Image (cartoon, rainbow, N blue to C red):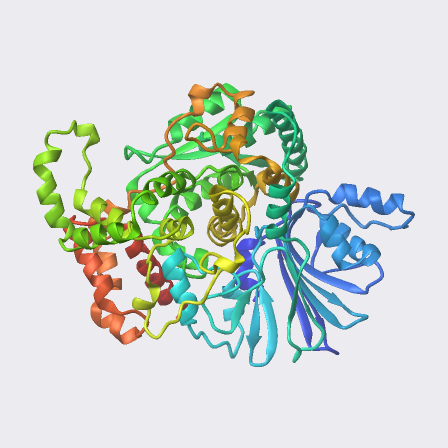
Length: 626
């Protein structure tokens, strides 16, 4: 199992077993703090009571050491690793108090030799992965599925409910996994197991739901300047803590608001130029490297950029099933892997700007949903439903042909390609009765997964079960909350963790410090979304370091020209994976809806790239996992 995870920890490995209880722990180490042998794992506490296998970083571990010593606890430290600090804190304060005090990202398994209990715990936001389940009656856990698949007796039964969720979200959301026998430990929780045949008990030590409600009900009362000053002070302290490393450290820099803010504060705290990294594409509309270079030049960082050819990007695709180890279809996984591989050539740790959108209202859907709903609700539902039926009565190609004479009168820069396709998408949302379902429309790929996955029933999730939503706050706040507990941990953080760890690179996200998250939820909506743009407070902070003209531009995302690739260099590869006989033989998908979209995409009548990518990434993963 440990050998399967060598990429996550190439520097050292260890196995420890307790023959009397039939328990074993294994670890692969990526040495960041205390690279000496004193950081070896599995690690015992000083008394020998606790044994841990742990992945992550406790950023405030030096503060915890000082608190332990100030409380009169005498500890003969063996080294200066955060693992040793974590064990000493658990031994002194207990598990729950330590989890509340710890600031960081982590997943760990802890064996209590005195009480003969196993504990699994995961960080508050879900930066580090943790799978668990049963194999031939044994309780097992690991950072990635490939370690669990290594066990004799593992049965790789696809969970069709999880597959239906994957088709909606392009990832398998927590607590599901693609396998029936395995689940993910949700963020902010810990699990206790006192006997191998006992039922696992999952407990919550930090709740994003409670944090969001408390922030809405107890908002920041100061002025905008006071909010900005406090935010800057908090984020600078966080970044100082996350820059602690015994190995080379740098940062991803796209030139956008989030990464530029992190790099600006890093450079303000560093005596040396910060190492920054970006990749560029030659295709128009997908290249942000020039913007990143301008920001790097202004801040004085030691900047490295790499322009990637389509061939180099396409060569990543065969590696994706092994890298992500579970069906995953966010196509920005390709540039994420490439920038991680670039950074790893120079550093071992890289900071990122992840979570700026979710915490400060950066996604376009926050703006579009409210704006669109205000217009929709002024039209009676029966009339909207009738208009939708009328539009759907004709195929998109016919609407495109009918619109062609009108579009010729429109300036070239304002013309829509596939006008009929866009009209059909508008018709899809016309009958929607409330803004919450409008949000679901924006975040769903396949809107009716049960019609695609054979014999599947899509279970309710936080997104589809309205009883789990916030009961107060604006539409934008409700959407930001849903993204914080679903899209961020299940998509964004999975994408970054697996891509980076595949090349043995540790990533750190200062905006995910739970104290920053809690402060962000106290910020009133007007300090986040203003004048038709999101991330107002984050922008004001960045403007203290970087001129607005260097970072202000339309949001493009971190994408690749997937639609044209599927019609061109990826066509043969996709055709083989979508072979109708193959799909029928596997018995997981209903072929016709998929093949219809494939034909429409190839013809250019519709752009189904992201829907097809969901299927292709699953098919590619299934082929790899056999």
